[in-house]
Length: 464
Image 1 (cartoon, helix red, strand yellow):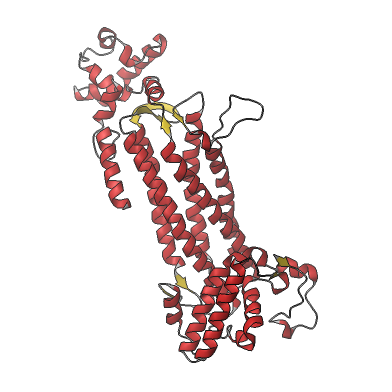
Image 2 (tube, rainbow, N blue to C red; image 1 turned 60 degrees about the vertical axis):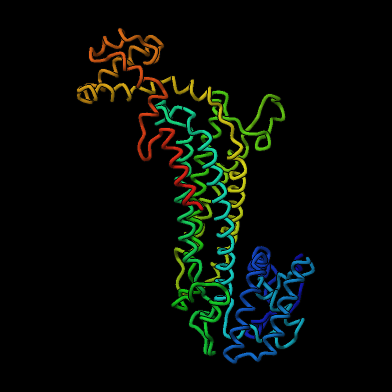
């Protein structure tokens, strides 16, 4: 609950001769959205108080009072008994004011040796680090589901496309593993981003550090950071880590959007390659026959908002001089929404992918159309000594004949094929079959069923 009429004295009010304009107070407040940082704000404050006691700035008794008071404030928030105040601007001042109400003047000592500038930078890093770990788990769950589906469909033949035109036969399992490779790169980017998130700005204070004898290594250790940041100016003004996370998110969502586009196509009556369970679809209010793939469509649509958040953060930072500026208050809503969107989309996909049902007969029939084994016929001729460019022309003429006759290469007689090259013999039909085509690509990275199963085994070993 938010109280916009609170008249609590502002901690910085000593410099000012008149109260903040009521509209400006609402306009500049961030507590409406940054209150989600309360857990990380209190965690950071407990570590800060612990460090201040270890270096002698606080007494042991003061430290205990502060920590117990902060734990009580957190309990109030989690019980829904905390009154958030717009007049106190943000999560930090709301928590500190409630702490002081509880324990008295000792609560005012908590802010010794720090500023809201380094405090908020620390809170966001703590928050994002936790969310990255959650996202990494969902990403791993989706990858595991893809591997299971790819193994199940290792022998299922479908048309492979370029330019959305039938190109060559592939296995459905092989196609799914292409999705998997995109997610491998996403997971690597996420974990690499986490390294740069996990450095601690606390102790930079407003911009120049502090005159108190703080030990930042203690605070970093208590909060699980790899190390403290090196430069106080950069510490409070850096938002690269948030931009980097949103860049990861934009690429991940681009991949999920590509998956979505294929799922939408494949569930259409025109393709009819797969079926999605009813629980991931919706119907039409007017057309009773409709079964709409709303989950993939919505994921595809949400990609735009995540891309927008990345541009928002890049634009936010592009003109800022050192060090902290109020502009940086605008970093939170794009970041928070990106996190929420990515988590939701990953959960939807991790739940949905294992439930995909392949319509193998329809896929196979589609692969028979469009002369998908034309390259195999060209390779066949090359292996019999025909230069590839000549083989290409021969097969092109055979395809033209097939188009005119409405017949695939595999449906032509040996006599008909020999009109285009006398080298063609009875064994040609071994390479013109769909099974022969995919089996022939039996090498690392190829579409042969055995290679798909081997790739799944390798991926499972790496996934852990």
